[in-house]
Length: 258
Image (cartoon, rainbow, N blue to C red; front, top):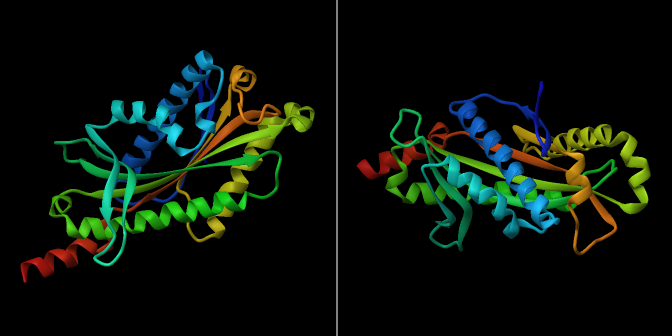
């Protein structure tokens, strides 16, 4: 079932969730609010600057996400360094957050972000976006070794979330076809992207379509592609179970005791 939120000046959010496991609802609520606040930050940026910072890749996406994270978490670290293994290269995760600190529901969150683009209308999800999804999930698998190596992580639930943000645009030549059916086209793109990622064997379980308010469609400009117009953004997320549910930390603790 899809939940719809209408946000003044921002547009509509279509939210779809699946799966249930420990802390899934709590973390999904956090991700939903994080996305909502990020869209509000983007709207303020667009109304003042007239160009869309969320359309220029992952590094500039921090401009709208970091302020939202700062409001929602107890503390966080950008570009958290991790060690994937003794003989493997080190890496980084975009965000490490501590949420609900000091409560029975305290948990620690690793969030990996990827950004892509998708032309509309289009019957197939871009191959590059599928590869970005796989890459984000693979990077979060590498976090497990860091968790095993760091005793500070043993006492609290550790949740990993991958988030792929996909900007939806149309070339000028397609505008007349899209305007009368923009809602339908965006919904079809939303549904097909979810189904495509499911077919990879790594399904998103929190997915959000941001359908732009008409003012954003008119104002948001692409400095590098003036013939393009932006219509919306996909937030495709996968919340992974607490690592202890996978018996990872349990086995490590047993080894340490020996």
